Image 1 (tube, rainbow, N blue to C red):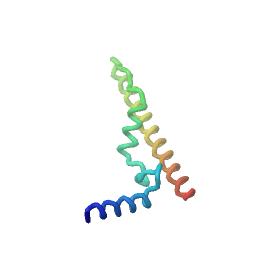
Image 2 (cartoon, rainbow, N blue to C red):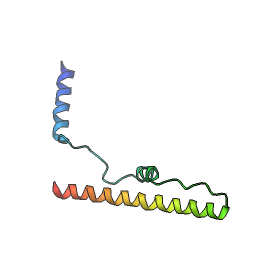
Image 3 (cartoon, one colour):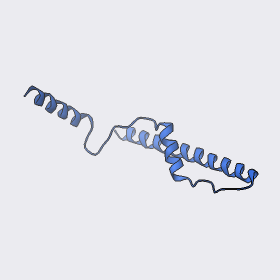
Image 4 (spheres, helix red, strand yellow):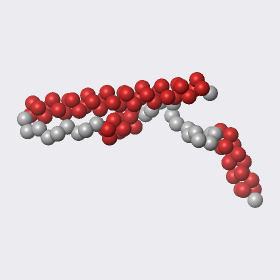
Length: 87
């Protein structure tokens, strides 16, 4: 019975700490997550036989991933800041 009371107390505290429809997230988007999201959304470079074109394609891919990663990071930061201003 004591365990049930403790659990009920924990549930009540949790309900106050995180309102329905909200989740707790880190204040900044971790770089690894932003990079994974970017890689998932950028087309892989097509195979090139010419080593010069292969290097160009790979560098272009890396630049696109980097750009998309920072785009996600910037948008996430703006979303968190907007939520903080609202609250």
